[in-house]
Image 1: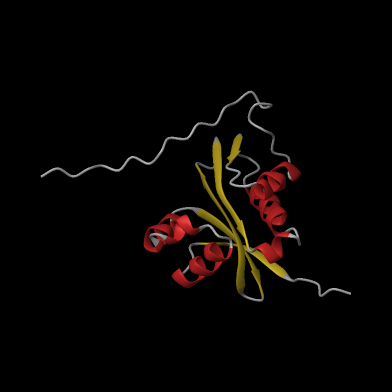
Image 2: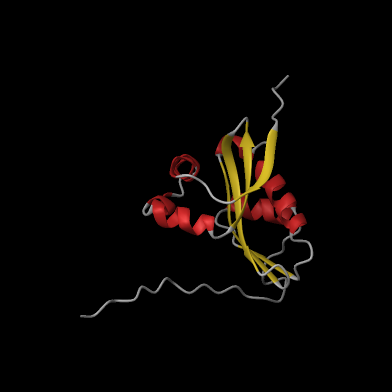
Length: 145
Protein backbone atom coordinates (compact mmCIF):
# COMPACT_ATOMS: atom_id res chain seq x y z
CA UNK A 1 0.00 0.00 0.00
CA UNK A 2 1.26 3.45 -0.92
CA UNK A 3 1.58 6.25 1.56
CA UNK A 4 -1.39 8.62 1.49
CA UNK A 5 -0.53 12.24 0.83
CA UNK A 6 -1.80 14.95 3.12
CA UNK A 7 -1.56 17.93 0.84
CA UNK A 8 -2.79 21.27 2.17
CA UNK A 9 -4.14 23.86 -0.25
CA UNK A 10 -4.27 27.50 0.73
CA UNK A 11 -4.07 31.03 -0.58
CA UNK A 12 -0.77 32.80 0.07
CA UNK A 13 0.56 36.30 -0.59
CA UNK A 14 3.83 35.28 -2.20
CA UNK A 15 6.72 32.84 -2.24
CA UNK A 16 10.27 33.25 -1.05
CA UNK A 17 13.26 33.03 -3.40
CA UNK A 18 14.21 29.53 -2.21
CA UNK A 19 10.70 28.19 -2.86
CA UNK A 20 10.63 29.77 -6.31
CA UNK A 21 14.00 28.19 -7.18
CA UNK A 22 12.94 24.76 -5.91
CA UNK A 23 9.50 24.69 -7.55
CA UNK A 24 10.20 26.36 -10.88
CA UNK A 25 13.62 24.71 -11.16
CA UNK A 26 12.12 21.33 -10.27
CA UNK A 27 9.62 21.70 -13.10
CA UNK A 28 12.20 22.95 -15.64
CA UNK A 29 10.45 26.33 -15.98
CA UNK A 30 13.81 28.08 -16.07
CA UNK A 31 12.52 31.26 -17.72
CA UNK A 32 11.20 32.22 -14.28
CA UNK A 33 14.66 31.83 -12.75
CA UNK A 34 16.41 34.35 -15.02
CA UNK A 35 15.24 37.22 -12.81
CA UNK A 36 13.99 35.72 -9.57
CA UNK A 37 13.33 39.09 -7.94
CA UNK A 38 10.98 39.98 -10.80
CA UNK A 39 9.31 36.57 -10.55
CA UNK A 40 8.83 37.04 -6.79
CA UNK A 41 7.27 40.48 -7.38
CA UNK A 42 4.96 39.10 -10.05
CA UNK A 43 3.83 36.27 -7.80
CA UNK A 44 3.26 38.67 -4.89
CA UNK A 45 1.00 40.78 -7.13
CA UNK A 46 -1.06 37.77 -8.21
CA UNK A 47 -3.59 35.56 -6.49
CA UNK A 48 -1.75 32.40 -5.45
CA UNK A 49 -2.98 29.09 -4.18
CA UNK A 50 -0.31 26.71 -3.02
CA UNK A 51 -0.13 22.98 -2.46
CA UNK A 52 2.13 21.91 0.39
CA UNK A 53 3.16 18.47 1.56
CA UNK A 54 4.06 18.77 5.25
CA UNK A 55 5.07 22.39 4.68
CA UNK A 56 7.11 21.71 1.52
CA UNK A 57 5.88 23.67 -1.50
CA UNK A 58 4.93 21.13 -4.17
CA UNK A 59 2.64 23.21 -6.37
CA UNK A 60 1.18 26.61 -7.09
CA UNK A 61 -1.52 28.11 -9.26
CA UNK A 62 -1.42 31.79 -10.12
CA UNK A 63 -4.22 33.96 -11.43
CA UNK A 64 -5.14 37.56 -12.11
CA UNK A 65 -8.73 38.72 -11.80
CA UNK A 66 -11.06 41.67 -11.35
CA UNK A 67 -13.26 39.26 -9.31
CA UNK A 68 -16.29 39.84 -11.53
CA UNK A 69 -15.79 39.57 -15.27
CA UNK A 70 -12.47 37.83 -15.93
CA UNK A 71 -9.91 35.50 -14.41
CA UNK A 72 -6.69 34.64 -16.19
CA UNK A 73 -4.80 31.58 -14.96
CA UNK A 74 -1.17 31.73 -16.03
CA UNK A 75 0.75 29.18 -13.99
CA UNK A 76 -0.19 25.71 -12.84
CA UNK A 77 3.15 24.48 -11.54
CA UNK A 78 3.44 21.15 -9.73
CA UNK A 79 6.55 19.11 -9.06
CA UNK A 80 6.55 16.07 -11.40
CA UNK A 81 6.39 13.53 -8.58
CA UNK A 82 3.11 15.12 -7.39
CA UNK A 83 1.44 15.46 -10.81
CA UNK A 84 0.58 11.76 -10.90
CA UNK A 85 -1.22 12.21 -7.59
CA UNK A 86 -3.52 14.82 -9.18
CA UNK A 87 -2.24 17.83 -7.24
CA UNK A 88 -2.47 19.98 -10.39
CA UNK A 89 -6.11 18.99 -10.93
CA UNK A 90 -6.99 19.64 -7.27
CA UNK A 91 -5.32 23.07 -7.41
CA UNK A 92 -7.43 23.89 -10.47
CA UNK A 93 -10.64 22.64 -8.85
CA UNK A 94 -10.17 24.62 -5.64
CA UNK A 95 -8.90 27.77 -7.37
CA UNK A 96 -11.71 27.92 -9.93
CA UNK A 97 -14.30 27.14 -7.22
CA UNK A 98 -13.12 30.25 -5.36
CA UNK A 99 -13.67 32.29 -8.54
CA UNK A 100 -16.98 30.63 -9.49
CA UNK A 101 -18.75 34.00 -9.76
CA UNK A 102 -16.33 35.23 -12.45
CA UNK A 103 -17.97 35.26 -15.88
CA UNK A 104 -14.98 34.37 -18.06
CA UNK A 105 -12.06 32.18 -17.00
CA UNK A 106 -9.11 31.90 -19.36
CA UNK A 107 -6.14 29.61 -18.75
CA UNK A 108 -2.75 29.28 -20.38
CA UNK A 109 -1.81 25.66 -21.05
CA UNK A 110 2.00 25.64 -21.11
CA UNK A 111 2.37 21.94 -21.81
CA UNK A 112 0.38 18.80 -22.57
CA UNK A 113 0.06 17.88 -18.87
CA UNK A 114 -1.41 21.30 -18.00
CA UNK A 115 -3.80 21.17 -20.97
CA UNK A 116 -4.98 17.71 -19.88
CA UNK A 117 -5.55 18.92 -16.30
CA UNK A 118 -7.46 21.97 -17.57
CA UNK A 119 -9.71 19.79 -19.73
CA UNK A 120 -10.26 17.42 -16.81
CA UNK A 121 -11.83 20.29 -14.83
CA UNK A 122 -13.99 21.54 -17.72
CA UNK A 123 -11.90 23.89 -19.86
CA UNK A 124 -12.31 23.67 -23.64
CA UNK A 125 -10.05 24.41 -26.58
CA UNK A 126 -10.49 28.03 -27.62
CA UNK A 127 -11.53 27.05 -31.16
CA UNK A 128 -14.43 25.00 -29.76
CA UNK A 129 -15.37 27.90 -27.51
CA UNK A 130 -15.62 30.32 -30.47
CA UNK A 131 -12.70 32.34 -29.13
CA UNK A 132 -9.10 32.88 -30.01
CA UNK A 133 -6.35 33.61 -27.54
CA UNK A 134 -3.63 35.94 -28.78
CA UNK A 135 -0.36 36.76 -27.06
CA UNK A 136 1.72 39.91 -27.49
CA UNK A 137 5.46 39.42 -27.00
CA UNK A 138 7.12 41.46 -24.26
CA UNK A 139 7.99 44.96 -25.37
CA UNK A 140 10.82 46.49 -23.43
CA UNK A 141 11.16 50.24 -23.57
CA UNK A 142 14.53 51.42 -24.72
CA UNK A 143 15.84 54.33 -22.70
CA UNK A 144 17.36 56.95 -24.95
CA UNK A 145 19.69 59.56 -23.59
